[in-house]
Image 1 (cartoon, rainbow, N blue to C red):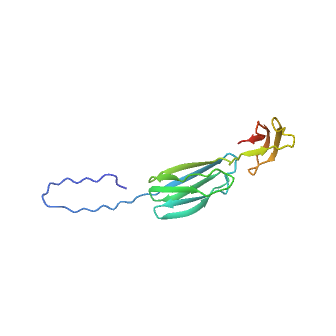
Image 2: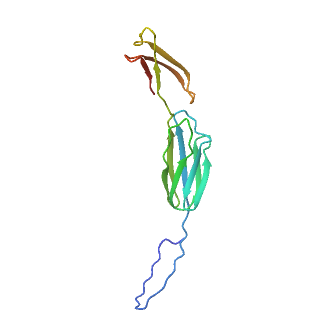
Image 3: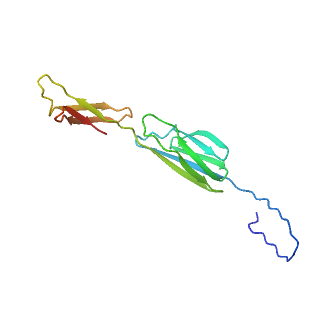
Length: 156
């Protein structure tokens, strides 16, 4: 492999020259982390430079895609209901190197409003207990007290 080409000749006529350049490929690595620790079997779509494919994380939450032409690719995580949506991210592949992009999932959380009603009108200061296991598998054990409107708020 030759890195430098030199030519030393003084001429007044045009000279045509040709170069045959071989561009080596690069790689992209997707690294997945998640608040609940689930990182295996997560699907990603990789698009760019004539590539459009879906890949899946291994048990360590990683994907290595080799033999990619240098350029910019867009990586999009497939949607999962229990996580906050992720934005697509660009990854720039450079010849002979591995470019990395990381995605971190945060569990979706919601709000719960409990409204206390009573015939006697006593709705303020009532304590409610919310317990169980969330959709994501996290234990829930929270308390909320009603305000002057009879509402108790459980927030993420």
